[in-house]
Image (tube, rainbow, N blue to C red; front, side):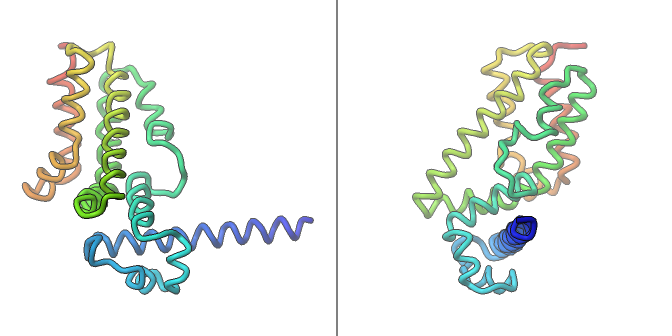
Length: 207
């Protein structure tokens, strides 16, 4: 029985590593070549596995969505963003300076890993109905997450919650952030510094 359990755990770990390798390869291909030009064979070659191994991880649209999730969170765990430890601590924090510092750290972590894959996702959604629907769902969930984050500022807000949420949704959106970083040459850290300062100036009561 112990041997059987060990072998099962070993197979699970091997499967996890294979999936991680395929998704990391897919991320590199999608970022380098774009969604439309990336083939399953190209992902297989990048990962050093067979095309069949790649297909066992899902069709190309599913691989893109999984790659986006991996870019957003850094892992393959199916845990919502706001249920993750860093975001839970941020939501609970009520000390103003610490909360703004945590916001900056979360922004750096989120946009360092997610921005390029979100851009690939958004562009791919323009030519694929399945991905277009997935992008709409992503934006719906992003608004809900932003609202929950904004609600955690409630004791400090000087704006109506709906207005404050819309402001946060806007200045944390892909087009806004990507424009500053990719087009205007800001670093992720510079954007995160600006974001924390803007939230305090635009949303909070004077301290």
